[in-house]
Length: 170
Image (tube, rainbow, N blue to C red):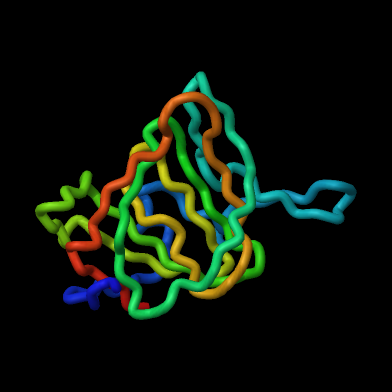
């Protein structure tokens, strides 16, 4: 059984400025667009800067996520050194995002390096290459469109931080 969190991060609203050190917020709100397809569509360009090394390729996947129950204890941080990783909710479901400004050390908690964000369900995120983040934290069951790098090499490094006993409030 997981220990109860001793320290809680307060999830802040997901905004482009607050999330900028870690990547991009994927949303239409406030973004430039133009009409296409004989006026039947509106296009919003360049919402995220996707990255992949020259040996990999960018791929779209769907993650079928299940609800993470509260209180939610952060247990793993991961990063993708060979490419970015983007998540966008397909059913308008809110989700939590946890990131670290520095590489976590499992034996030395660095709570000050952690930040938590709450997506409003109409926003996704693109983690830049090498950004430490927690795996997907779904607040309800649902599908997420995921864009990330596929190919040779290890593009997922993980660190166990469960001993830090840090939770997220939203």
